[in-house]
Length: 61
Image 1 (spheres, helix red, strand yellow):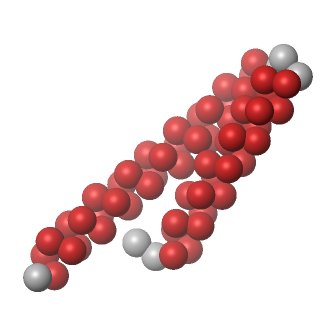
Image 2 (image 1 turned 30 degrees about the horizontal axis):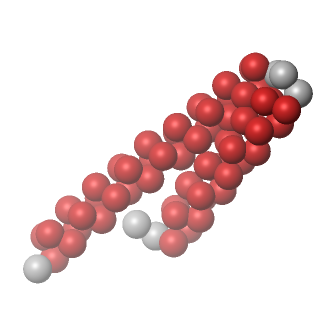
């Protein structure tokens, strides 16, 4: 996985945490849920990239 993908996933997760926090602070359940979804998407993408990295490491040897 490239460093760019890692940065994008981290940024998407951070954006989600911010949205969730703002939604919680303002009692905006829609924004809070959107933030949680952003975080879940970022974590799913990261997990997929981790699997790709593990496969690449296993087959490079």
